[in-house]
Image 1 (cartoon, helix red, strand yellow):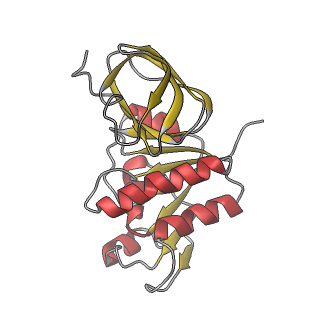
Image 2: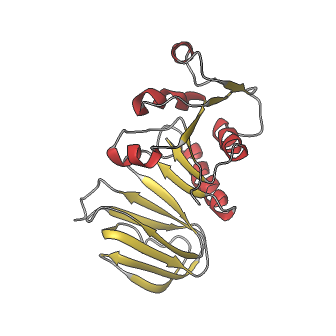
Length: 216
């Protein structure tokens, strides 16, 4: 059964690439406050615009007068992005793409997006974070395959001690490896095509740079 994909437009850095366009194609869209500025670049019209709109200049509102808005007060318990994600789930999302989730001016927001994605994965939602140039995928116990161009860089960032970590089809493969929290052992690996990762215990993020072939 095909999962309904919602792309959440967040306020961080976003670059238009063929890989990004392919990822979001055919899905539904919700904009979180200033993330609405990415809609024109993507050539899409979000079905909803969520937030307190403190990051949305007047001109942006004038450019999208017909998009339904769900306003919130500036003093609230969740970020605009979290509210947009909640709304996507209420509308039937099974897969979430957080576009504009990485980099940008706010490191606190970028870090929170990674932790949000990890929690969403625990709840059963397939989740991708992207800036167009860089991607992040939650890693939980189990096995996953990620399609990456040969020669592209990727890193596995442990968010807890990891046990039984295996990495296949990479320049530096691992088999049943135990990774202490804070270890740099799994930084800057090189994909030889679609990579396979499996994990017995722990929580991690895969950060991939599909267009960065400096390690080739």
